[in-house]
Image (tube, rainbow over all chains, first blue to last red; front, side, top):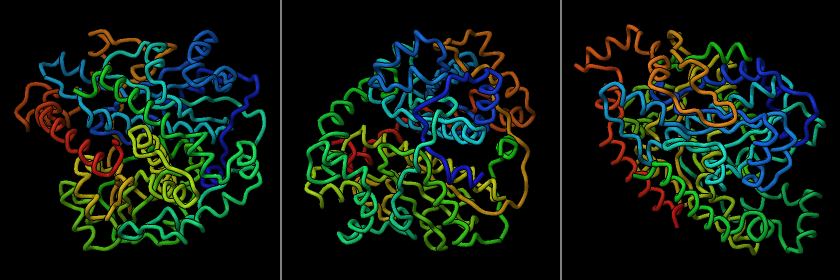
Length: 247
Length: 247
């Protein structure tokens, strides 16, 4: 298992082979063994197989092709609704329409999503996370009919890999680990931490293609800009409010 | 692997056996293969082994004994600082002091945390998640010296299991899965979804011990109350602001 995780790649191209409901459900059911806050299981998974639904979801994910080409799209949602309904039916007053409860549910949700990915990859499937889920949560909420106290946290496309891309780079291990307390990186540390990433041909091409001077500028000026981040932050907080998580 | 995940339990009692730094680092390094937003790896892990540091962390985790009895305590933090420092050193202006960026980093962090747990359990170790991390983030930030754009998301205590507790219950699979769109539970569904949980002897004892009428009341009136949730929500948002994630 440790070896399969070492060798894992994000898979964005899938064969035509479908995933049987039996296999999918089995993997999901096992993923639900993840640790969960107070045993509450604060999540729901929306399974999209229908071509029309994929079409509807696609713009929310900036038309990334995986949404339409993967046999299965899974939207993992934080869900305090089911638990709150139960409270109301049992003479108890739920108090989960607040930000802390959202974060508790989002955490539960992400642990399950990652468990699912590990299991799916171990079975020979390939997955891709779509970070766009929280960028355009309002559209996803509408398309999937998500009621109050349900919020989309992440989306995974899944299918059989059509090819095996190269292993992607990672930062040096030491950069990510802090013994006892946080140790701020010095300017020299930063140079050394990002040296490998900056040396890769694909990243040099990235700089040239975007007419930038440094790789960091590709991130700040093209891929993840301050303006877009701020607009999407506002949108996300607005959605959280609308779904009842910021009372 | 699927079988080890099926049989997993949260472990709260550990033997005296230490975890070698080599083994721990190996598991962490492999966990860093998790999917990450744009390859940015927006996390840091703080490793606590020092008894005094555990003592300092303990109140933030409501003195749950695992913090002091586990050989290793890991605090998984969202970290946009390292990446922002790099941008600043490379003539790029980082725009990651906002809520969307926090959520992106928190997501990266939780995928790594869950990978670590899966790997650790596969190696015979036992883990426990401490949800208290975001309840008392301000204290943890202080104890671990977390600078701006670094935020504690979850904590895991880890060690060799001193005993193997019973497998905990899970809600029926069908309750958590929605085909194509969200299907709201009917009152009859809710009764059926929570029937098993309500039937367990340990939960009946829970009701009696707390002098309550229903199990749901134990959650709403004792374990996760509206008042505490709201106070902690305010505290969490205040901390996010202080760490620079709500500009």
